Length: 154
Image (cartoon, rainbow, N blue to C red; front, top):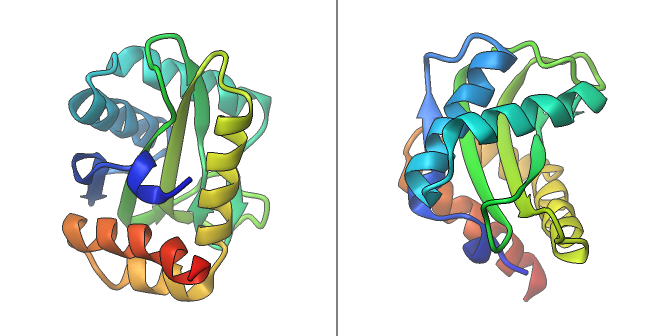
């Protein structure tokens, strides 16, 4: 699995208006709706329901919210770079400025886990996160993410 399969350019955004986790989930829902024709309210609610089980802030300023949805056929992602970090109740209590949300069909077992592992491994790389934080252009962010794992695999 590659980032190109998970993330379209239309699903990448830089935001300066997010001030809370709730607002971030709304922005992710809106972006998923425009990029993948998903229902924004269902996406937002699915993220909130998953987050209620435990925070998805994995540390070092990175959050990996994820949810399963009835309305999709394959695993897709949404990436948002926040200009101002927000409290996300992350495991290291650090504020979050990188959010990569994943959505999978209800019955996607292994594909969902593979995608989550790919994103997690990639965003654990300090050099990748530094490049992302230094480039506030959605097209450049998309390229950085799509090239990060393919160069590791070579």
